[in-house]
Image (cartoon, rainbow, N blue to C red):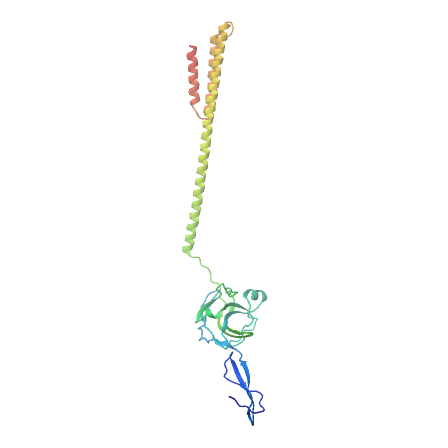
Length: 323
């Protein structure tokens, strides 16, 4: 209880907790005693969360050409629970004024990587994490090419310098408090020269050689298949040609035999016509000449000796008949 003089208009209460509602009873007193009290409820403003300080380079864990791994520690809430943790990447430009190491100005306006790249913003939010994701100190890799709560954690450019900030945010209704801390600075690095691995090169050569050999084997098999098909077609054509030749020879020999018989009949009826011997001699010569030409053509085109045997048999038959 606090007593104030009659002409006081205010009083400051200290050591109150942020984000806490207090009830105050106010009453006036005269020479006759206290009057009825008036009750007032007042809620104190929330405070920014408290981030634990790091010892030296404790926050820095690892670094590559496009990433940097830092240690994140959970914050302590003051008057309001932690709403989110944010990782902010600030690109250091030699033509831009750098922030002081002890500055308390945090990044209140969220900016995505795409917006920063197109709009020229010096910073962007690489990630936003819910408080449940950080119950204890945990590593986080800036530039891991993943998306956190809608913010793309893009790979860092090897030839650029960056500051990495860690922010803790508390929000109650329309009031938001943010506390930030610079965790590490990533300097520009030259991209390492890629030296080919001899073992990988050997494997690549072996793979290429295997593929080439497979292609050659396939082509050879295809050619063999084409040759077999053509050979079968050629054999079929030869077989058909032999059959046709035999049929033509049979028809022609039969025709000559019929002609010989007709001439013999005519000679018997008319002795003054061509004599039997003349007709027989003419037919035999004609048959011999025909067979010679036929044998020559068959041997030249088909490489066969069957025609020669057939003609020889026909000639012998004709000679036997004449005798």
